[in-house]
Image (cartoon, rainbow, N blue to C red; front, side, top):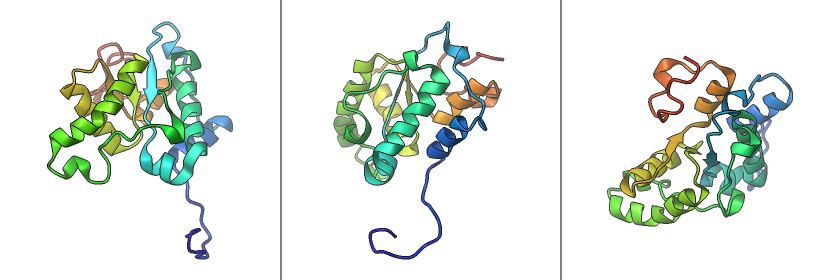
Length: 178
């Protein structure tokens, strides 16, 4: 719309930007107290479409604000590089469904190594393609991390994560708060 100067009366945003806004406004009550003693370490994947292609650095900043608020700033380890300079995971653009898993995994080895270098136990992947690709390369290359969506940890930070929503958490978090 902006590129072709098409008039419109709406604003393009993302749920993570809204999470950040609602947390700053006090409308979304989250905290990282659940992780003070556990000290579980998290990192985050910057999805191509919402970070590098559209909302750019503001999206990366909002995502980090939300994550640090829900896990504790001291428990967040950023990948290097990060934000708009982060590496693609290799799962988007139809790669997950293309039928070339070995090629996708070979490309994803760069992302796998980047994740391993953080030594984080959890990777927050806000994009479904990133989530599946990072999970797959972790299994393929024998990674020692779990992949989660941001809302799962947010619900944990609000004390409302249901039993049926814990299936992909590691044993360190699967029964937390039950």
